[in-house]
Image 1 (cartoon, helix red, strand yellow):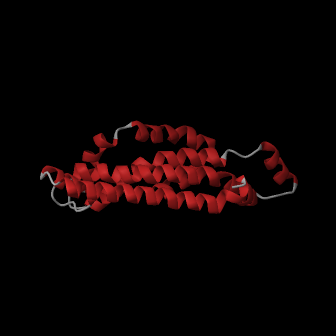
Image 2 (cartoon, helix red, strand yellow):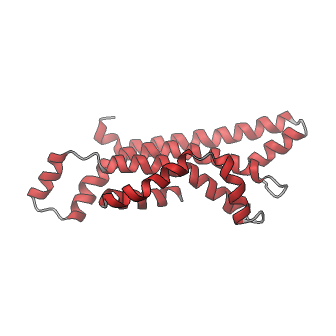
Image 3 (cartoon, rainbow, N blue to C red):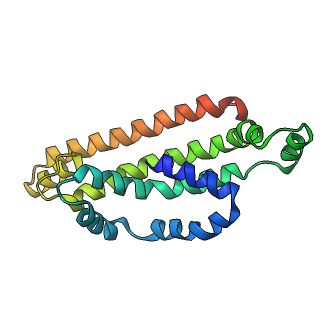
Length: 187
């Protein structure tokens, strides 16, 4: 969800500066508001019966801002002379976007994705801790429940699993980064 939202907004912001000036401050507010403070409100609005949706919303909120900022930066990282060259050859806006802006934004996007993936995992854990009303069944809830029962083996097992998921996400995205941008940066 964070990828879809940030991609859509970054494209809109890079195309229309007024949109960015109007709505980017709201993205900043979402970023600086502690997720722990917002989580109970989201649980109330979504309802305790729908923990999965709550987890998705909170993970999306946490992962959204780094992706948005890196995408905007990437879309704007084009050398002015490259843009002028595309204009000189009569490239349409779409051609300039596809053949110049997208490749220029790819390294920033993939870098932001690596950051956001880890933050989404943290957001999901925080959401599950806050939402833990006995209806949750994920790793964070398992950790919390085992901690309350002094079952350190289960706490470590869940913690190890969460860490393994985070490491796997990171290295998978690092591999994708290498696949998509390695030939551009000489890796």
